[in-house]
Length: 496
Image 1 (cartoon, rainbow, N blue to C red):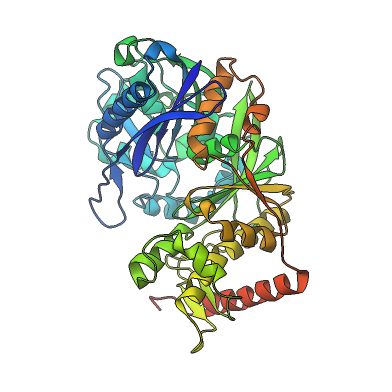
Image 2 (image 1 turned 180 degrees about the horizontal axis):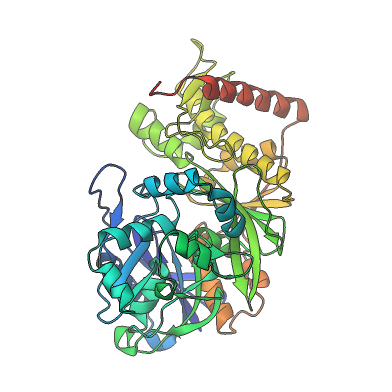
C-alpha cells in the first residue's frame, strides 16, 4: 500500500509517494510564482496552485511506476495562514490568495488593538493580534472584493486556507473542510472549545457559515474525484506545514520538539493536553488533533536562519554553496571573539523587535572569511537557545530536539547546536519531514499506521548529536552572544 502527500508550500508545490513503511519512493515539484501587487502585499494565484497540485500528483504516481489504484490515501500539508475565497457554485476563486507574509491587514489589527481586543483574542486563539494570521486577510477580501459580500449573503461564499481550497477542488466541490491545526492559525478558532468563535467572527465581520468544517488531522475528509487521477482516492490526513513536520519527526510526546531550519526557523515543542499561555510572546497552537482530542504546542519563529548563509553567498560572496560553511567552521579553532547578530529583518521570538538591525562585533585584523561563516552558523544556534529558554520559562519541558530543513545537513552546525543547548539533537535520514507528516496522518486516518509514534521512530539511520563542550566554554560563548545581542537591541532603529 502507498500513500501520497501533497506539500503545497510558499514557493513550490510538491507531491511525494511513500511506501508502506513511510519511506519516500518518488516525487515531483513545480515552482510557484509569487505576485507582489504593491509594497507589503504578497499573493498567489489559486489556479496556479490547483494546476500544479494535479500535475505533481500525476507525475509522482507515474514516476513511482504506480497507478491511482495503488494509492491508499492522500495527505495534504500546506503553507499556513494563506487565505482564499471562492464561489461555492462555480468553484471560481474571487481573488488571488493572500499569502501569510502579506501585511495589508495591519490597519485593521491596529484598530482592534487600540480598542483593547488583543487580550481576548490571545486568550481564545493563543495567537498574537497580527496580520500574519488569516482573519485580517479574510476581512480585507470581504471588504475589497465587490461580489464577496453579496455571495456571502446568498450562502454561496466559501473561504479558508489553502488546504480547504484543495479539498474542495479535489472532491469536486463535495467537501468544505479544514483540520484543527490550520483552523488554529486563522485567529478565528477557539483552541480551547475547539470551534469557530462567534465573537471573533463578529469582530472581524466574517460570516461563520462561509468557514469550513473543522475535522481531526487524521480521518476521512472525502475522496478525490476519480476523474482526476483514475481512481477515487481517500483524503485522510491534513495539517499545516509546521505541525506536519512535528508529526513527521515523530514528536508525539510532551517535551519533544522540532526545529525546521529554512530561510528562518520554526520551532515547536509538544506540550500535550496543556495549552500553555506564553508570557514571552510565543504562540500557543494545536499540534494535531486525533479522535477529537487536541494536542497543543508552543511555537516560536526565528526570522533569519538559512537566510544568513544565503547572505554569505549572495551578499558577501565568501561562499558559492551552503555546504562550504561546514568546512569553514572547522577550519578555525574558535569564533575568535566575533559574533553576528543576524537581525537583517529585525528579531523574531522571543524579542519581537522589527526595528533592530544586524550587527557584527569583535572583528580584528585576524578575522577571516572562515570566522564570519562560523559566526553566522553560531548565531542560529544562539537564537535557538534563546527561543527554547523562553519556552522553558513558559512551562514547556524540552527533552530532545529534532531538526530538519536545509541547514540540518550541516554536521558542524548540528554538533554546535547540541553543545549550546546541552541537549541531544537528532537529525532524521529524511530531512523533508513536512510531507512525511502529512503521509503519516493520512496513513493513520485509514488505519494503515495505527501507531504513528512507532512509524515516526522507524528511521534507524537518524543521526544523534550530543554536547562535546565543557561548561566554562559554553558559558563564555553565551555571554559573548548576550553582549552582542544587547548592543544590537540598544542601537537606535533605522528610522530614528
